[in-house]
Image (cartoon, rainbow, N blue to C red; front, side):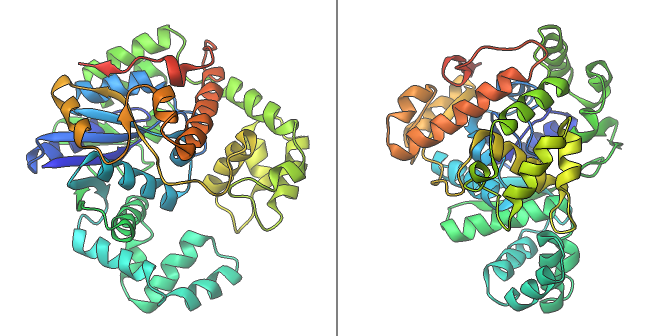
Length: 387
């Protein structure tokens, strides 16, 4: 069984290690990960660079890690999931493992089919017109049409799991969903326990000093994190604020109008907020409305700063960030151009050139946001991790 996982590993922790172990226990003889690179879905810079997160995952059970290019990594759930599914299917994976509050593949697939049908459209429009967020409106519409489905669609991991199932259906991907229960702590929760192993969500860990991560991450990963902190590789919130606002302040509402996530006059709201905000949190607060959740506004700000266009091609290549030597032959059967050098992959077509350029721009932005500023061009010059 060739299992694929879509992940951020922001940072990699004991829950991620448990998921890899569960995939092994389910029969995986090789595990490939499509890992967010350059940006994460929260509309932020990853807390650690790709090379550190790759080494942590390979040391704890992953076999091959490919970049989920930044323009897809900071997209909404539907586009994020679609990109991950396409990448892993192209690698030749036959199974897609993911965490879920409802680890029932049939039920999650039924939810995906419901959302792909037109059955909920009238209810969805009515709820959106009433000012509900999209996620809340969709869950309520699903509940009205299919009682019991609304509760499933209100859980964060289920929501992403259903998007994976939707992507498998729409792409006709040869992937079998393998939902796994989330262990120890919920998404965005604090701490918990599974067996004798301490668990904490990545979101909670990001609020702590690196030294305090130790109980919640594998020992090999903690050593990598300690060294990364020493080398100045941790994300700096102060630098992130300054870099983001600097890019946004050079632009006008007209510049923002052609950016992904900007519609319904949001370009004017963004332009006004940028003139006042002193940091990211104030920017998000100024942008906040009942209709738009915080996560969307964070993505909107990053998209606007880096001019991410609304229409992106499907993932056009597979850039390998790291692998165990025995997994590398899998690349020979890949259905997309695959390799370790972004420059070579960009030469495979117009879509690859476009995505590679956008990805590189985000990696360069991320390099500005470290405790120790890193050079440009790391998307092209960072060597893959081979164990």
